[in-house]
Amino acid sequence: MIRTILTYPDPDLKKRSTPVAIINQKTRELVEDMADTMYDAPGIGLAAPQIGVHQRIIVIDVAGKDDPPELIAAINPVIVHAEGETFEEEGCLSVPKYAANVRRHAKIVVKGLNVDGEEMTWRAEGLLAVAFQHEIDHLDGILFIDHISQLKRDIFRRKYRRSLDQEGND
Ligand code: NI
Image (spheres, rainbow, N blue to C red):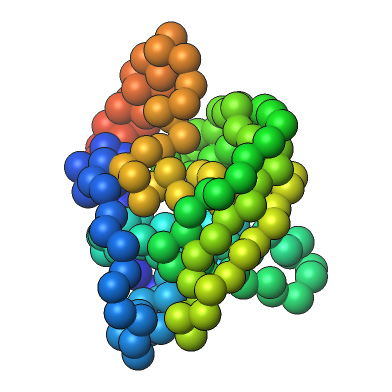
């Protein structure tokens, strides 16, 4: 089921999510909804708080449009190793029509659980590494715009507010 994606400045996006204690059928349904919502948007990642559920769950799929899907669902993901640096353009389903370059680690190792409750280790670099860091940030109430300079953020806020106003007037 496709859920509604919360958008900035919804205060629910700033809240910290809590770890999942028990993985059950409800968790799997939530993950399915998250994947449906991400693919429908379309996006390459989604965190549970973006649909108003404050549990530490993310879904990611960085496979190309014409490639078969490669869904990663990570529950209670934690970055256990990070190295290198990258500075790539990012966007976010919760911050529509805006993109900015963000400094991230180039290579990371993430540990967490899959939907069957099994312990997983994901080794990621490139776009996948960026996606993991972006989505895990969401679980701590951090948006990619929180990583850009104050000056850029001020410009963003002004532009964003104006575009929201315009939509309201349509
Ligand atoms: Ni995002």
